Image (cartoon, rainbow, N blue to C red):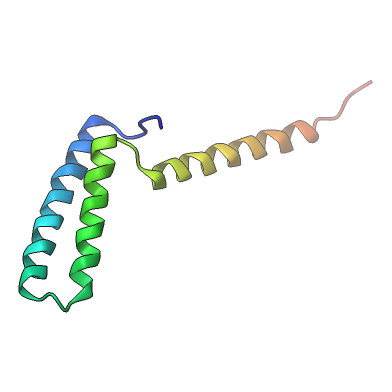
Length: 85
């Protein structure tokens, strides 16, 4: 797994992830019957994990999609070239 986000982006993800995780855990302790706080805690933990590994699956998916689209565009351009001979 190759890192696909920068160091500043990773530090921001870790900070925001821990903030969301702490907020969700505090609210989950007060209202354990609410499932939405559990979802927020998982999303916060996911952001912390992305920051620690410096790998974001959505960024990788977007980069692969853009590279695939560029590759398709160059293939289409190559097919439209007319050979003068």
